[in-house]
Image (cartoon, rainbow, N blue to C red; front, top):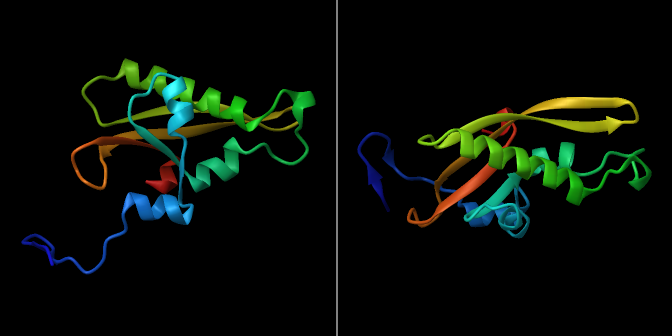
Length: 131
């Protein structure tokens, strides 16, 4: 058991790997690498299911797909990351078409930090309420 003097004994920990296995985090590493990211990348299930998945009523006739919406998210995340060196988190906005004629502008956070082993950096893309 690990002891941390500031907080006492560790009672429970929930790893990133467990969160991915449970579906709380969704692995998008392959898509992220295609957009220039070099680290393991996930999005929160909240962000994915609310905005990346195409809402009912929007089909390909509206130019909407999971791949396209993920492309937009990752492109804007890359622009934000490149514009803000020296920080572990960036904030940016993404417009998602939610129904015909109605878009929603969403504040998104991209946070880079240590993975489960603490040695290799990982990226988490999330909504502010997921932080």
